[in-house]
Image (cartoon, rainbow, N blue to C red; front, side, top):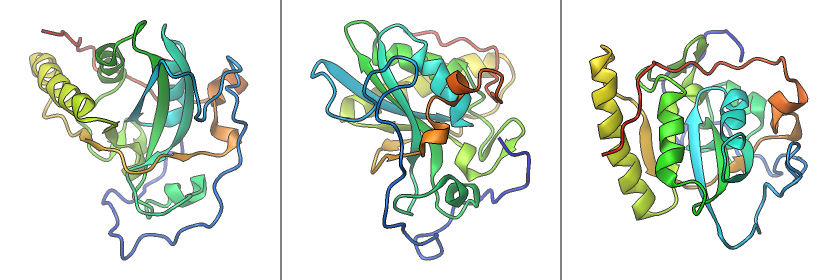
Length: 212
């Protein structure tokens, strides 16, 4: 979102910013659908977390998909508890900008969400996404189960083949079990619904995800 030079190496727990005592303040209802973006949600729903650069465009990508119940912008993968956006932008919290997705697996599968994730960005860029440079913009998939972890890892192998056909290098996406998801403050939730002409940095590679 801010085209400035930022740290491109993750901090350590020792040099990360200190925790904040209070979480962000946000509306628990989705600005577009009016549905809850916090648990409890209906029992039939599953959840997933993806990071593919600036979370403004990433969140809109997912809330528009059939079968997605609600989405939320936030942070994961770092060390600082309850980080603010300004904290994350320093590169000293270790967090990536991510989207929490609540979805109905009877209407959309986890693999379909993975396909949308892979095709919407360039997962080979390391600590950046296009003009957005910094650790917060790295490509990540944070999983909630062994099944999700295996599916995500398998999907990376499949998409790597498509990327190679177009001359891209190795995928740098971090795929691991989630620790904690922190909600961003209300300004960032469903941002591109509130500001339709706002910045969206999503740009795919043109490679297609082809399931086996």
